[in-house]
Amino acid sequence: MSLINQQLNDTYQQVAEGQKKWRQTKLEDRVKMISHFSTLLAEQNDFLARILTEDMGKPIKQSRKEIEDVRGRIQFFIENASHWLSPKNVGSGQEITYDPLGVIANISAWNYPYLVGVNVIVPALIAGNAVLYKPSEYATETGKKIEQLLHASGIPQDVFIACTGDGSVGEQLLDLPLDGYFFTGSVTTGQHIAKRVAEKLVPVGLELGGKDPLYVTNEVDSLEEVANACVDGCFYNAGQSCCAVERLYVHADVYDQFIKHFVEGTKQLKVGDPFDEHTDIGPLGRPQHVSFLSEQTREALDKGATIVLGKETEGIDQGFFPPTILINTDHSMSIMKEESFGPLIGIQKVSDDTEAIRLMSDTPYGLTAAVYTNNHDRAKNILQELDVGTAYINCCDSVSPHLPWSGRKLSGLGTTLSYLGILAFVHPKGLFPKVI
Ligand code: NAD
Image (tube, helix red, strand yellow):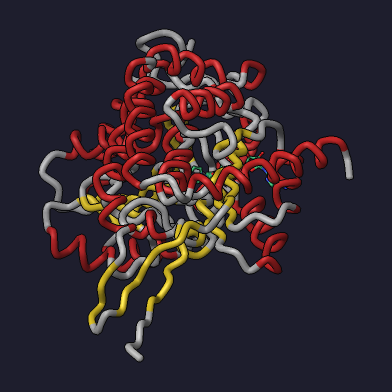
């Protein structure tokens, strides 16, 4: 056993002991500590935002917003956990009770470390689990701050521990006899984790990538407003959102006008220093990803796409990639099939809803899909044909804590958020009394 392995093993023994006490702590006391955590996030918002921006290049105003938004999610758990975790009387004296899983791992991504972290950490702790938290190596300082603030809120030191480092630390967590693995990240790593822990037969949650489509129909009131919403959906956080809009399909009747507004709207985005209050797009979280985006752009251009904004290779040295729009794309191109995870979008013209549904469905992913139309029934008819976890009507790239967050097909397994995302961190137990 390597030294790191030995250290992690000791850490595991520590949290396994800690969890035994933690599960006996009253639910209301666990909730109070999480509430205190939320207060600390608010008090330290500006300071924490600077660390997040330093970690992964998110524009400072978006870092502040992430930390503010995460408090809404925490509030959801604070208000709902005790209802969903309380024993349920199902008649004839029979009851369903809920036991924590035990010690779980949360192996996390860097793009929204607070939001994706809290989806797991908060309900898991409230439900009485201990957590070994592996923040992304691209958000290490933020991961350490999350640990510090949880401890400062009263969560015991032996109940939540951040195990920082790269994928090799995550790999070692897979060797430990943990009671659940909850992962956010790429499909490749997610599949690897699922295979590695399969024999343990413990719960596994995977929140993975997407290639989320958005369809603009020929029934919208203001094309300019729709185009601006699409700009946000495609380019917020430099497109590094699991549910970022990654493919646009536009009805032929409104295509030219939509492109005009979309390009105009995108031109308003300011690219630059992420600490500048006016910046909308900073450097990519992983500078080496610029070459992937450049390659995806080049391949599409070689196959006949047209670039209407951006440049194929701009900013390669500094880790920047400018917002880039390609039209005349088709499904022979990687830009319409493989996750880009950057400020790059392909647009395709469609003649009707049948063609839109066919193209939107032509993907191995199934995270979200969006339709813009003022005809609600039309939107619902289209969306019910799509194999996705979240279906948006006249909005996109948004997450509600009240709704289950789950990917289908290669986008993942299991659910966070909503009441299902609370019950994901417990084992139900049936109590079957018989009078003798
Ligand atoms: P990644 O798979 O490279 O890394 C994720 C985490 O896994 C990191 O902490 C990393 O250190 C760890 N890891 C790497 N190799 C490992 C191994 N062999 N064993 C155990 N752990 C290992 O992903 P990323 O670049 O951090 O995240 C980007 C991806 O995450 C995108 O595809 C994005 O769509 C997806 N994502 C999905 C959601 C969702 O809710 N569905 C949310 C955010 C991000």
